Length: 357
Image (cartoon, rainbow, N blue to C red; front, side, top):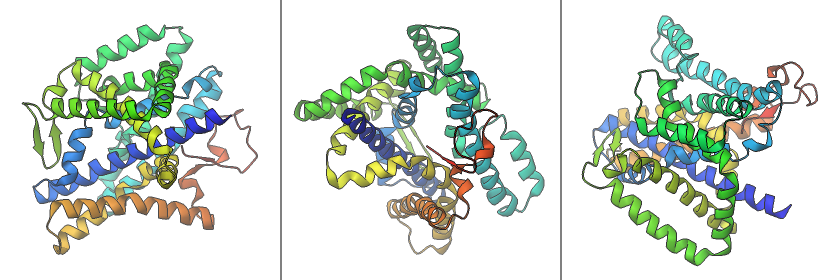
């Protein structure tokens, strides 16, 4: 259907915006930590702090209704094992590269590998939590918990500011509500985006108002810009933080819908369709580029350094993906092999691989 095609276009465009913001944050904060100063990307990230990750999780839940009714085995294969395969693979690769080879410490690398089973490793925590969130949503579905009750529980967890020290638990409390909102409120999200597409002028006015309110609450008293993190002002208050996150996620979806109408923005849609490829593979080239640039010392401006690191971190995974697709070497990096499925769930042909998405 045409509507479904348009819907997928803006969803992928929204994913493209999200992955740029995520890689931008890691690039800027990594460089900032090295230089001890902030740059222009820090201010963009500060503005996006309330909604950067919530938007990614909300979009990830939008089409959950299409699979949540499947039996546990088929659902787990598609929504749990799928993500855990890529998490496990890339966690091993990153730990071996950064700790095993980089630090030359096999014992510490083995310890990191063991802990990665229960504590999400590094930037891959998002992939890990997608599997956890999917399993939790399926359990709530099986138990017939009303959407309103599940959303209320998720909101309460988010506003509680839980800090147990267990990263998986803390991240579940902080972000599950957005994933579940994407699932439970998908019809509302799609209607809002359809309205924005049909009414671009009032939609742009609404987005301008949202941007002003978001900025005012983020950069209000209490705001602090650090080289390696941002502290929001009033926007960090319980309840208000949740509202800003939801409003920002919906705003970014609307922005994506308007951008998807522009032919010259098709690259952003393509990027979003391959956002998981970037998410899986950006950290190693990002870290390597940052270390080399800082050691060489030819560029000292934090803004310029951050932009270069961001550009490399975004393009290197796509270059690797293109090489893999063209040569067939290392396809397991971005496509789940047939053997990595639960028994009885392989409706695909023997040897065929399922891409990360």
